Image 1: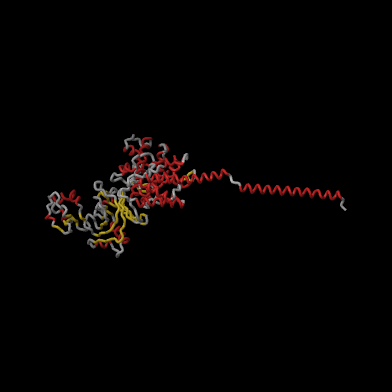
Image 2: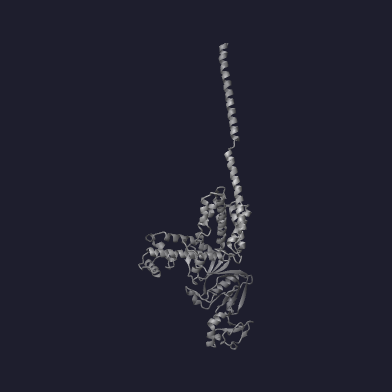
Length: 556
């Protein structure tokens, strides 16, 4: 049996365990209460900051709205001003967004802003040698957010710069739109920008507004390589410029006709030519003076490239298939699906009677055409021959017609009069191989009365310089182009052009689908290997146009 002492000893531990149990329960309950209280606790500072951020966002939208409305009310520039039209676009852009910011999130700029400013910083690689888009000022504003006004200024300045950059990429540098031809294109820019922001592909969408012309694409692709070469020459001391870089820079400068030095193009002779052309000491050594001249020449070539990109952007372009005549290149390009399909040699107007820049549609192909002589040619070149030789007209196949296209006996005309033909009569040459227009003529309406045609003077196509005409474009292998056009743009029975020519009768083929022709003055281009190719400025237009488009020639 257990005694009382034993029972006591057994009961004591039980009482102690109970106390421990109760203490443990209290402890755990206290911990549980603490955790519950902790989980329900809200930091008052966090709540205040959240309210501040929300309030600041609301205030920021409100400030944007006020500033945008102020721009709208004060947009008093002339109707034709591009600045005024861009301000209108900016107003519409923010109205559509309910004045929400684009480039700023609370207290900092966002990744979209970084993408945009990188594009603006690289504007020189797109043919914009100046700070047209105020990127320097945007950088300054971005460095300091002292107050809301600076943030609003940064926000709106960035949007304005973006819209202007898109416009210039699409249509070139333009300050006024007197014909109001750009309105429809301008109005779509905010939509493109909003879509780019929503899709998070800002860079691709902005650059997508550029012309799809193959000549523009090739030149733009080559420009970055040319700029890199220019910088390499500019920032390398003469002693460290290797022969490969020197040869290429002299070639691009127009001093050398080859991009490499070899036995037919020795380094010493090319340097001597450069020194002779620019009145430098003739030692055939690349020194500081010769280096400075090369850098200056490359700089001018860069501005030429910018000018030609601008000319291509100014072109009212539509469609993927067209003919492209480049006057200084003496070439006609057949472009299909924005790829150069075929190239023809051409002869263009001489400096005194230059071929005009224009765009039109080829409507007709004429086999065995007549040549109705322009009055200016009769007056300036033919009249004295007619007066001197009474058989001149007959021997060269000319006859006189009136305004009703009726033949008039030439002996009834008093050729000694000051203006024997007046407004009543014209000289026309019979069709045939010796006709000044050759055997094929292509008609496209234009105010200059120029057209594309064959020529009996085939030997001239062998010459490097081919500016001989009175403004019209003479084409080598015109039957081949005529066959291409009638095959692709004529829904009637297919014509055999060579057969039509052999029949020696004047025949007109109306194209059922007009094909676009662009006649342009582009003095440099990009090649397939990304090298730049420069052509002679045969009408001496580039320098004056560079000064007009880029009035302040400073460092790129």
